[in-house]
Image (cartoon, rainbow, N blue to C red; front, side, top):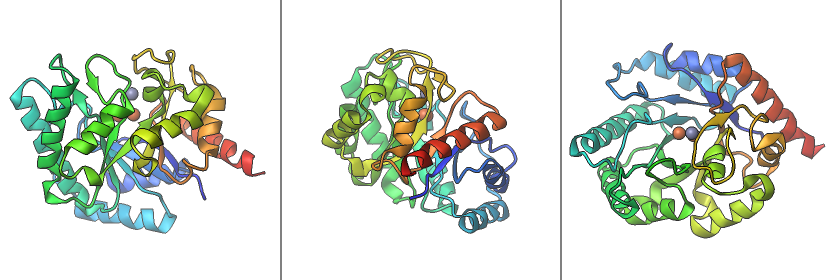
Length: 281
Ligand code: FE
Ligand code: FE
Ligand code: ZN
């Protein structure tokens, strides 16, 4: 199966432009913010632009895209107004993504800001019940978090509890961020298969839908969340070779969120494709 790999792209020039840029750097998936990551409003959707992207994706045989919710959304804030905004923005994003059906939308579960993980999980479930009520044609993915501050989703157990706790939990999936799980204390450098076994036992591997590929500036269990370029951090190139060669991960969209400009992403995509074919030889 072909490696599905790409990177986070700017949505500033529109949808079709992202498709063209992705193809230029040999990507066959990509991620983008559904709106300004600092929150805020969205431009009206340009149907012609979206249709042009849809045609491009089909013609070039792209895998699924992984749209990213603004990281400032917090479904488990202590402030009702913040929760209200997060629910409204997610529902609106999912409505807009109906014109790109069948893709993924990933979000950070939230930060409980001192209310405790249990209260946070309850609030996240309440929010998801409201947001998923309309039955979107987009699979919503919880991202594995590094556990910085009061982030919820710092362990597979917390993610499993969110999925079990909401009515439409059956349609949720997980996006595994390599930097975040490592910073969260899962040693994917020494034992990737052991961590995947653990994921399977706690959540179920069939729920794993996408990956964020990032090296980490810090050590396992550091709970820092500082991304590094592939091969230049604590994880190292060998970890990413193991990831792209792992038959349990092959075919899932893998999205780079490393500190790079476009040419840096092009280099990393080339490296990952080389690492992926090395094993088959
Ligand atoms: Fe993220
Ligand atoms: Fe990520
Ligand atoms: Zn991160």
